[in-house]
Amino acid sequence: MLRWLIGGGREPPGLAEKSPLQSIGEEQTQNPYTELLVLKAHHDIVRFLVRLDEYRFASAGDDGIVVVWNAQTGEELWELTGHTQKITAVAALPSLDSCGERPLLLTASADRTVGVWDSGTGRQVQRLSCFQSTVKCLTVLQGLDVWLSGGDDLCVWSRKLDLLCKTDHLSDTVIFRLVAPSEGSLEWDIVEAKRLLGHQDHILSLVNVNDVSLVSGSHVGELMVWGVLDWTLKAAECNFWDPSPQLDAQQEIKLCQKPNDISIHHFTCDEENVFAAVGRGLYVYNLQMKRLTACQRAAHDSSVLHVAKLPSRQLISCSEDGSVRIWALRENQQAAAEPVPTGFFNMWGFGRVNKQASPPARKPEVGTSCSLELIGDLIGHSSSVEMVLYFEEHGLVTCSADHLIVLWKKGARESERRSLQLFQKLEEQGGLHRAA
Image (cartoon, rainbow, N blue to C red; front, side, top):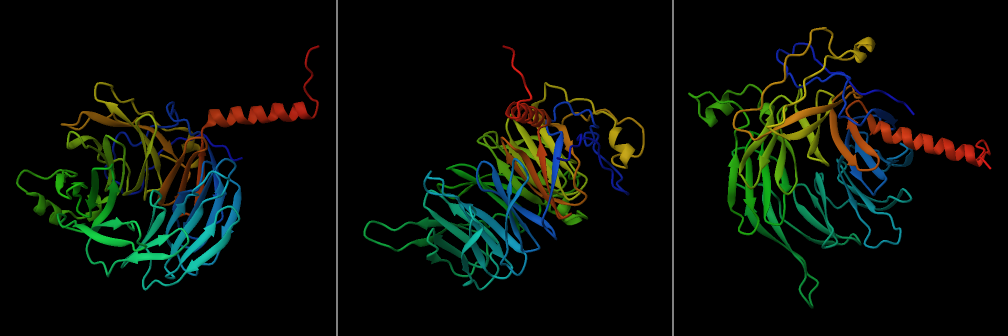
């Protein structure tokens, strides 16, 4: 196993300004992920990761290949081939029972097909080729035992791969209600519930928070909370930049040189907060208070592409700059840890090249009641990190434009596991002699 100490930072050439919290050095006492395992199987950008069960996941990307991995050992289990163009969406269709049956794996491709695979054997169960355009998203509704494919139209499929119903051509962002068959009927139906017309630009992110609300985010940094009972707008937030007093929001958007600096790329949530990846920053929006409660405007050097929630009020983010960072959501009464200058990775050409100490940590943003403290900086990728996947027992998984997948491990747990395996092996070989 390749074992690295995680640490260091990045400073791309030409970067004029960096957040003082962006580099914490090798003394990452709160970061448990001190080992990594590099997995190689893909030949192009790896864009998707999907969890299959408690110890397996699948990866897919622009090479059209889907690979199933063991999350504990990093072993490649299956390589699924059959698509002729890049993968555009993946999803796992869980088993209905607990008899050991493995979930099905759904893969959509730019070749206008959807592959259905047995994740336990790697065998292709079926290949659907009835689509008029590329399927760009796959969603499983486990409670209804159906799955959806979305592109220019929306299709609803049964587990047996029967097409239950579909919509007409889609041109706007539309919320649909899926109507299951009533007693004595076999007909499914899709009914339009709401067109999300409140945004002023393309909607890039959408997340269902709970049974009563969902959140959407746009290209120009608008976050909107919708009530799913009456489909009305409950709250909105667009304060993801620093507009000058003389400029209104619309003028500020037009003057923005880099629209991606305020684009909402991804959401994740818990019962209390929505965590938004906005441009290069991370923002925490409290649903009950209906306002931002924490933010880190320069969490990365480039756009944040994906965020995931960890236990104990922690968050992990990955970026176009190749970095993966772990954040802790703190109450403002607790001071953020002082950054530590980098040192270890400079020996190998990583991290900062200057030897000046990092400036003091920036105070929390005015008006926020919490702060995001950087507690881990995972250095392993050399290009844009597209997605991160969390396993409680087996660590973190990241995929990147460098064609690599990195499995991040908790060093203390792995050391204990190796020691236990060694003692077991010695006992089996009679190398340990117990006292009489």
